[in-house]
Structures are given as C-alpha cells and as structure tokens.
Amino acid sequence: MPGYTDELWSQTESLRAAIDDLEFLRRLGDGTLAPDVFRHYLEQDALYLAGYAKALALLAARAPDPTRAAFWAKAAATAAVEEAALHRDLLASGEITSAATPIPSPTCLGYVSYLIATAATEPYPVAAAAVLPCFWIYADVAKRLAAQANAVLAANPDHPYARWIAAYDAPEFQAEVAGARAAVEAAAATATATERTAMAAAFGYATRYELLFWDTALHSQPWPEG
Image 1 (spheres, rainbow, N blue to C red):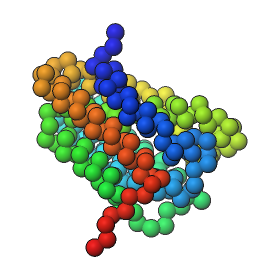
Image 2: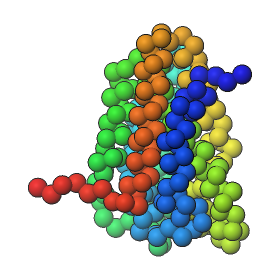
Image 3: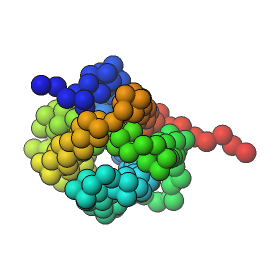
C-alpha cells in the first residue's frame, strides 16, 4: 500500500522527469561530460554537503525519539565525512583537479540556506520532508545512470564519473534512503493536516532546488558583479 512518501514522489513527477532529462546528467551517464563541468559540480556539491550536514544535525537535535535522532546524526556524519572525502578524492584525480577556492553559486547558497532555516525553524515533520529529496533523488538518478554507464564502468572502473555513480548507487546509500523515507513516514503519521501540507510544499521546494543545482552545473550561474 503506498505511503505518504509515495504521494510526495508522485506529486513531483514532472520535476523529476525534468531532472532525468538534464543534459548534465545525460553526459555524466555516458561519460562525455567535460571535466571542467564535473569539477565545477563537485566544488559546488562539496560546499552544499557542508551545509546539508548542518541541516541534518539540526534535524537530529529535534528528532522525537532516540532512534530517529541517531539516524539523522549518522546521516549528518556521512555527509560531512564520507561524502566530502569522496569529493576531495575526485577533485584530486588528475584531470579534474580543483585549483581555485570556490564560492557557492546562488542556487547552492539558496538551497543550503533553505534547508538549514527549515531544519531550525519549521516543525520536525516539515524539516524531515525538506531533506528527503537529496537522499532519494540522488539514489534514483545514480541507479538510472549506473544502468546507462555500463560501457564507461567496464572500460575504466576508476573513471571519476563512474566512481561518483557507484557511490550513490551502492547498497549502503540505498539503505540510507530507505531509512530517511521511513523517518518521514513516521513523522507524517503523527503530523497535523497543516503540517502534512507544509511537508508536501517543502519536499517540492527541495526537489526544485535539486533540478536547479544540477542544471546550473552545466549552465553556470554567476553572481552579479559589483
């Protein structure tokens, strides 16, 4: 029987279809993405992960029980340590070495600010719904790209794009996504009608940010000069 998170997933179908159709992801999957574009994406994602970890830590502090608190705290540690380490390794892998000190793009800063503010100020169920798209959409995209990227993986298992795909298609990450969904389902079960409406809105906003984040990796979004 479909749960509340299935409803959220269904409500964002058109946005997720737009994500699946992004040129950035198509080129990432078949291995033709320009190295400088992937480098820019990794730099922005590293900045994002630092903020995302803070949002997850805030969520852990506000969780209604020790089990949920432990889950979000572990997820925060994974984002801050393990995923960040993967990004550093990829950025040091020859052709995509990062030379400059990056600054967050408008989309990156907006997404991180939204998640941290929501985790700090909105009811717990709304905050939990807001952080879910990053888990779920990454896993969904990686699973699809892994199927499309077989030739790239077979030719070079150490290819930086293939390593990124493998990390988010790994069983461990898929299990973490299942845990995040379960936490949101539990939150929705005790949420008020008003909170459930706000949960759907938060999930939708975060999904839009996911779309913008990947799109601006290929189509740069510079800050105005001045």
